[in-house]
Image: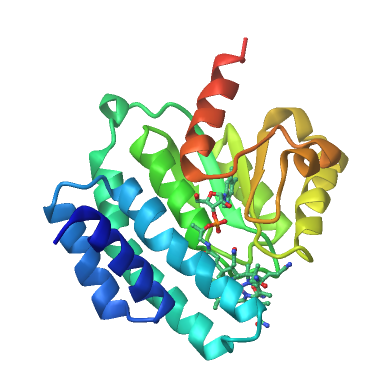
Length: 220
Ligand code: B12
């Protein structure tokens, strides 16, 4: 099968909510020698975005969106370990420690998992707290592991406010200068990051790695 045909079948497998097909197509992509991040960005992500649009326009109901998410997750289950394996791990030394999670009230974790996997592949020590994470858990974990970065993901406009609240909490507890706080997720913008006083925003996982490297370079 041609590469472009394979990528478009991946998109269709997610739109149509077919986890077994998505997993098999992901494996086929790897066998063809495609980069896992390319497979995700050009094959599967367009599918989940389209499913979101169909849901928004009322053509899909929640069960269909859930099936699409399951197909996306089946593909990620094949590709994520490959991303993590492919990384340069800095010969056992981590570049920096990152605590990451999806904020309280939000269960979306596909994009956050991708950011975590790519950071890990690039030599960062990643502590992934999962989804629906309270501000207390973010802060406790960051203090426990002496994190350099805290990454807050959110996909809902309503839970974007949790990012702001977390930054306020850091200030109140006197920990603001101790961590670099990064924000991300589909509704998040650079402007929002600036407005709430975050240290950075990245629109995708590759950019998130670049951002962390840049912020490390800027350190004294
Ligand atoms: C898949 C999906 C689901 C799945 C989630 C499965 C899972 N385990 O994640 C399911 C079906 C469960 C779901 C549920 C819901 N969903 Co939903 N969902 C989506 C969908 C279609 C795709 C999200 C996704 O995975 N994208 C692919 C990944 C790769 O992209 P990404 O998440 O943006 O992540 C990238 C970047 O943002 C960035 N990034 C992400 N996190 C971070 C963090 C940091 C620190 C950095 C630097 C970067 C970064 O890097 C990532 C990788 O490149 C979106 C539509 C969309 N266009 O986003 C709707 C969407 C987010 N959902 C929506 C809604 C409303 C819901 C529900 C409330 C529906 C309901 N009525 O129950 C519930 C949420 C319940 C809750 N409390 O959380 C709305 C949100 C609307 C809004 N304005 O707030 C959207 C936008 C759909 C729509 N068009 O209306 N959903």
